Picture 1 (cartoon, helix red, strand yellow):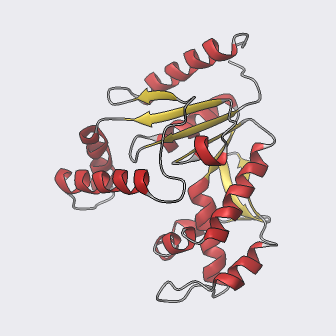
Picture 2 (picture 1 turned 120 degrees about the vertical axis):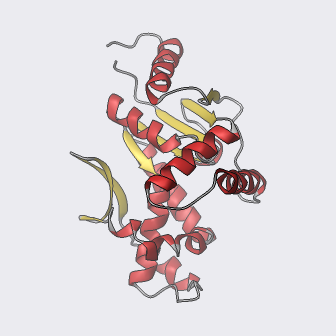
Length: 233
């Protein structure tokens, strides 16, 4: 199936499988997958390498703002899919370390960092044929996206999915603790002051509580046929 040069914005709650769905869409339709989380991790790597965040996670905001002015952080397509780069340097493995994971939240909370990431994502979006998932993609980052999807699923279903992932990685968790964590994240995401999680007025709701990834792909194929009409296989 060939589809027009559009932007697909996917928002929704934690553990609804947004990233897996977005990556599969990118692979099937030859779109570029924009991982906003990787962008924040890339800025965090910059801050760590240049000593702009200390052991107490205090950020040197003026220095970081200055460093971002010439920071070449971007995505590029590779045989293994879309990857995050600083210049010609692939940083996918470096940004997934525990050190970076432990410092990304205070970096992502800095206003100039959020402005930088949103600006870069919008630049990528100018070329179209991109798919991106997050919390505020269809409302804040790409409000003019041609196709917006809001993903949801029953809380218990999401908790079972997350718990299974964590147990597979060797973590000792209970379903109840995961449900409590997701319930808290839902509240925080929906009530934060800056760009809260919300469904865009023109977004299509995808409740995947009882759907496989293949079911979801068939759903989006049908959505594309109905929305854009003349698309060829």
